[in-house]
Image 1 (tube, helix red, strand yellow):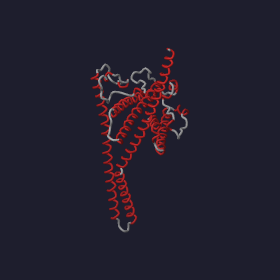
Image 2 (cartoon, helix red, strand yellow):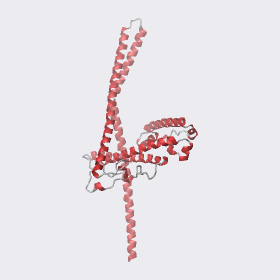
Image 3 (spheres, one colour):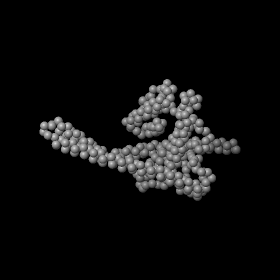
Image 4 (cartoon, helix red, strand yellow):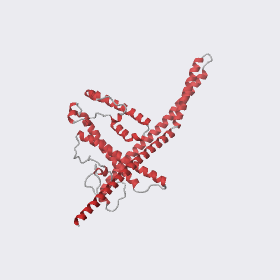
Length: 347
């Protein structure tokens, strides 16, 4: 979705180099151009509504989705059928991001519950990783809120019990934590019960959660298997392509040697073709040998992004804690002053 690309751009733009920002903007421009072309083809009345695209900031351009129009405007522009489709898509996406919030909180709890690693460097990396996990929680939360706000415009009831407003203070849960005595009776935020059968005992609830975890595990394993399959296919394609180039080079070199002295043109052409296929084979081999370095470079780049995001989240958390501490001090000061005045009045 173009909307997801815009959100991702705005979320990560500070971590990218100017070259990466420009490349991502080019991709956004292409996606926006394709979207607007399809919109005009589907609804010609859209043409006068679409302004010229600002190529310097495609991440801020409106998408003119049905959810961005009032109900009467959707009727005038014949957007009602598209609004129904968008509602179904966003409803599914909202449930999907609630799943991601739950999974991210579970993973965060598992790593947060104890010290990880020995030594200062290991603990620092572990702390950065924990902050990265928390950023995944907030990313899924923001995405859920985006879809829910659009669903409200498209007709979702504000009293809907399945897709309720989700606030930052609710981003917690017991999943992934060792339960202390009496903790199982503590109420969890509403999104942990979405999709869960009602009137379950504690044991039945744990069994249901365990079953959902199994489903997610098999889903992730299927994704891993597809990735491994793609890797095997790529390796086989490299091998077949390399053998093909080597075979073609041998054939053309043999033809060049078989040419009679009276056929210099044919010999030159055959040698040229043989040299071309030899060069293609060398490039193919170099590309195959360079794969590990490309993968390592991508992993290093991703690790730097995660470290940067973790530091940003940590700085934000420290700022929030500092604000809370200052607010607490002000409150205590006011309370102390009030008690002093009250004491003076009693005297």
